[in-house]
Image (cartoon, rainbow, N blue to C red; front, side, top):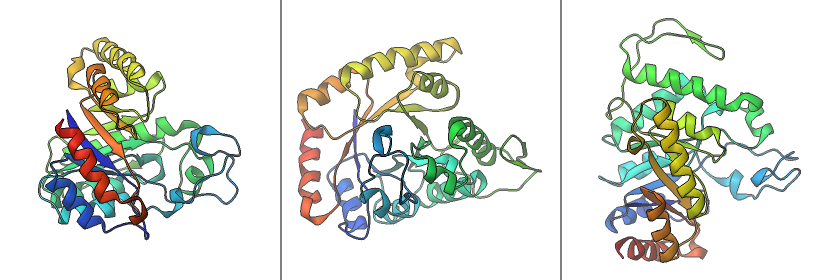
Length: 281
């Protein structure tokens, strides 16, 4: 099983290049950065779908994940670089495909696209997202990006975007494209993963929920004639209990991504050492 690190980086964080290099030196497999571009002053919904709930300042402070991962790529040679998660409906897919393929090119094929659609209606609207139909919008965007990454003269005529035949370069180093992981824990996520992604990336679920999800994902793959073991599972968690980690592995996780704070006051380099020991045990 692979181990990764997830952390939001901002102006108050430790040096990202140094942090990424240390992840690699310690033998950790991957580094994952989250995304929030803007946060409304008076949000209707807070984290976890709480109506009128406050949104922590940390959501606003984080830097762009693709730029951050480019910094990490320049400081490393083997570390995988993932978004945890990128809010796809808040981007134009042609521009996003260009930035992702450029990062995959410069990193030598190390990028992993973790996809989400967001939970904050005002943030989504400010960035052009169709919040009520955000997964339909994300699905079309992923379809477009796959065309751009794999076809010689891609074209598209859809609900959200249309364009004539285009020339697009560079295409990603990874073939046919970087791995795509879908976040979320609703029952519909399993059919979506089976149809259009390389894996599932749930956040903070219990091992027994993960085991149930593995079974549902296998069933969704079976329905379309896909082998269940071709769909991976990456679990994001802040739990570092070795027994819980073992339970995740037994439940079907292929990768565990441990979340941590990036500020000096939380001593993230010491925490990296702890995660590396956990991974080696």
